[in-house]
Length: 93
Image (tube, rainbow, N blue to C red; front, side, top):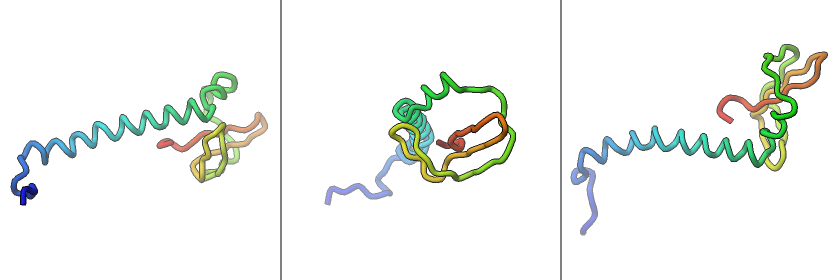
């Protein structure tokens, strides 16, 4: 009694929900990754050690590690060569 059924739902609600998801979820994900960069210390590391060169060498994907307060379980990509070590999270993180 008094509950809305799918037949009672206006069509604009059915259309709006997926559109809102595809707009709000990417904005939320961007915000979460931005917070992780700030809290985790990626911004401080990038200020000091950033390079624009694509690193070549031995590659390890799915590495676990921590940067600052943030733990990355299996989403880091590490590249080692004679110049040093490059660490970055995979694209979605």
